[in-house]
Length: 222
Image (cartoon, rainbow, N blue to C red; front, side, top):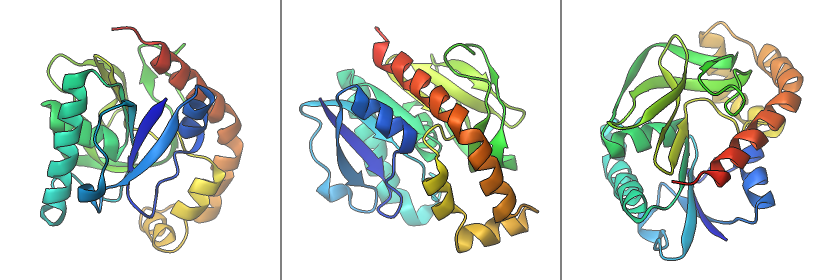
């Protein structure tokens, strides 16, 4: 089964989520946000997976890239192609489908629990968070999980999004916490050592949680 992975060129690792989709028989073609002119057509695509990004959808310097992603999301939605958005993918999908995106009151960085309406599917956590923005869910969408900052998961037909990062594993986090990531954590009063220790402690269960989430998503019937 053909799947399209939307990601930034320097951060296209779908981690635990990609691993589980591949176990279900999906094969990914990478489509980088920096080069929307190179994206393949949606013909024959049976899944769109949208990963996170350092961008915000309201940054003027990426407006044309966001517009291209918005167009793709709407086209996939119109065709009934299942879409799974993570962090920035969640924000771009909310933006495309009628919700809003704005700067959050406080950032969420590190491993946190959420409040889930479907804890047997969307576990209460721990989940990795790394974001500064918050969405309102699109009209007609069902909000399925939340934190004190805002919505953490929602569904609209065969589109599903998480603000948290179910894909995150130790190698992903090692990259994110290196260089500028370490400086970012320091500004927030966090340390690389602390976040990586929490990652090593939490990823065994978060891997199981991610697999359960993908299994549920693949089985959805709308």
